[in-house]
Length: 225
Image 1 (cartoon, one colour):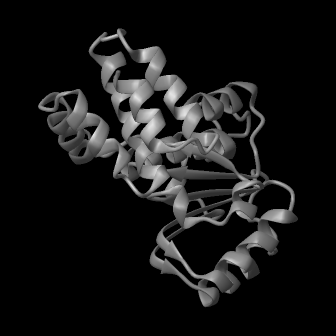
Image 2 (cartoon, rainbow, N blue to C red):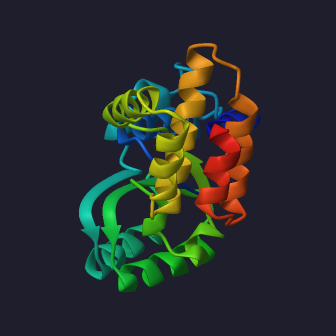
C-alpha cells in the first residue's frame, strides 16, 4: 500500500487525505517525504527552492498534532485553521496522530474531509483501522505502514515455534480482523526480506480473504495448511 503514496509522489499529484495505520515511526517517515514534495515549488523536493531550503517542520503551513484521544474541541480548532489562507503558495499540510478518536470529533473531521479547501492535505495516523468509521475510510486513502519492530519480533518468534495446529488455533482466536490482517502483512514483509517465497502467495490471498470478511478459521486453514 505504500506504493500508492510513492506513485502519487512520482506523478506529483496527491490525494487530499491519507490515513496511515500500523507502525508510527514508518508512517512519520512517509509523511515527511510526502510533505517535502508537496511544499516544494516543483513538487519534486528539488532542494533549491525557498520551501526546500526551509526545514519542513518550520514551514508556517505545516501543522502537527498528537492526541491520545482526538476530541471535538481539537477538531473544531483544526477546522478553523483549515479554512484560513495559507502563508505560502504550496498549500497547507495537517499531520494528525491519535490513538483514539471520539464520535463527535469523527463527524467533524468527516465534514472537513468531504469538502477540503484547495491545496490542503491531511496525513492522519492511528494504530489500527478499527479506530475509524467506514464513512471516513471511504473518503481517505489508507496506507499500512507496517508492524512495529516489537510486534514483528513477537509474531515471528511465536509462529516459528508453532506447529500447524497451534498456528491455526492462534490465528482463529484473533478477535480483531485488523490485527489478523496486520499479522499476515508482517509475515509477508518478513518473507520478502528473507527471500522465503514459499507460501507467500497464500499469505497475499489471505489478506484479500480478510477484506471479504471470510471467517478467520477458514483463512487460517488455507494459509497454514
